Length: 311
Image 1: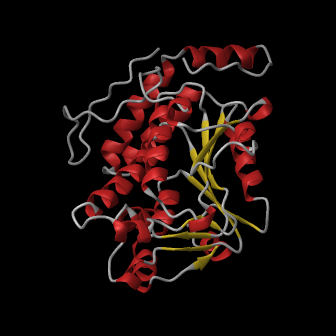
Image 2: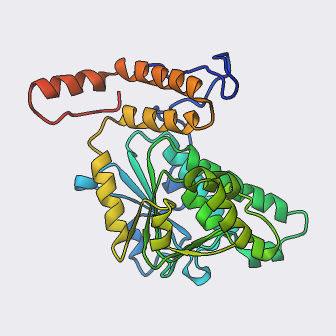
């Protein structure tokens, strides 16, 4: 496997000794899905199984390699509680080094809601000194979503407000139902988005539009969000199926190359074009050293589908 340590300046004009986050492919000792009490769709169907706020499904067949994270607090429209937060973070930690996970889809089991941000009732019940810590942990959760090395697709059906939209903004691709309600509404509570919204929204839709939406706290429909590029697709129904179609297009591609492309794009957005092109060159060089590249060339010459292994 190619070494993936790259050193470059995240800011400034010179390529120096600053190191970027490594592309991760090897298994590490991290909490497993089973160890944190998450369960599959089969377990979820059992009437004896208590409902958990986060459910993980590993798909098979033509969707082998797709991992679905389902938020499951319908009574609160998936407002993030401490239990949900901890289970979500453990799930992401487990997936970060999982070579079998090629695409992650984040969706909701709560009818009419993707996620409505932090559970304000739970925050109000916390001791005064604990509330800021809880909000900081939500911020860390959303950074963990953004840090996943494989493509992450958000499926928005219903309300995606505040921290809920910030989760979706941390994903690589967003698919929404046309009737979804999407917005950073924090100014209605006299605060500002505090988990990446003020930084990621302008990067997605542009500064002026982002300012207008954040200043006003306006909610958009999924259809309106698609028109301004906030979501990639708005569909009247079957948003999850549309996300699966996107995953189907990604799954046959070289896993190392897909992860390298994601990292090059994400980190390239934070630096000037000159350094971004140098970064791209380094990642391209890494993909040239992989077994997958040789397999791709061999498969092309033999007129057969490649069998990529992420090596």
